[in-house]
Length: 255
Ligand SMILES: NC(=O)c1ccc[n+]([C@@H]2O[C@H](COP(=O)([O-])OP(=O)(O)OC[C@H]3O[C@@H](n4cnc5c(N)ncnc54)[C@H](O)[C@@H]3O)[C@@H](O)[C@H]2O)c1
Image 1: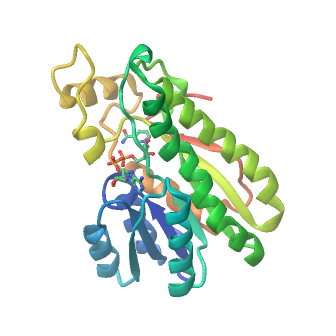
Image 2: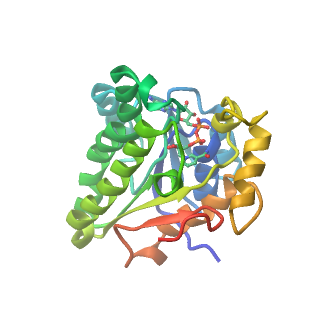
Image 3: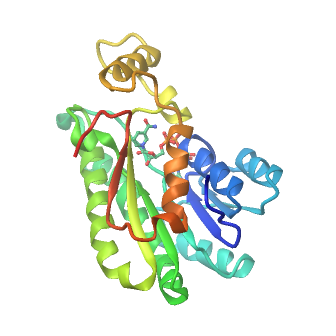
């Protein structure tokens, strides 16, 4: 049975849909109030959270901007006075062969997948440390440990997320704040469904099925396959676990 997050305030980036929406919904079910952050409106996710009887604060924010993240922190402080659980989820995953990646493409991926993780964590980790309780959960990717072409910038950014997770855990461990990451395999979300399939695959449906066949658990991964693990990492049950990256990927990667 899931532990209660009833006194907690959780912030999820990229909460308008996909994994972020599933994480927000699950944390609300476990009792947390939610701050929903995205460059797009989070109305659908907010309605789900409120249906579960929890408060939802939606903030439209480009988290790659230090200034915008500053406003976000001030708004969260004014409304809730704190953020206890931070889910650094927003990310992009363009497929581009290395030769075609421009420096601007590289910077765009790094800005959201890695720099924004730093900016948002920097805004909320000090408060967690002061209050002697916090959970920071970062979203990496199983592509870091598989053979996946066209992803040099993406995999570099997600490797950075794993390094950031380990390093920050070292500094936060003695202050009641844990820092962990999850690494999903290819999961059905608006982002992946709307993507062009890889060369040689007729459709994204075919790509989902082919990846699923490589996993010991041979079905397509769905957002809710991850949300229970996020809820565990957000709870008191995981208090003695930090600096770890959990592969929630149907068994594709063994570390
Ligand atoms: N879906 C997968 O197969 C998969 C696999 C491994 C890892 N991941 C990781 O999981 C995370 C979520 O993936 P998803 O498939 O749900 O993505 P998605 O594209 O469905 O959702 C991402 C959300 O991030 C938001 N966003 C984009 N730029 C932003 C910005 N500058 N500021 C604030 N919000 C912004 C988008 O509006 C969107 O709502 C990403 O970090 C991704 O790399 C996904």
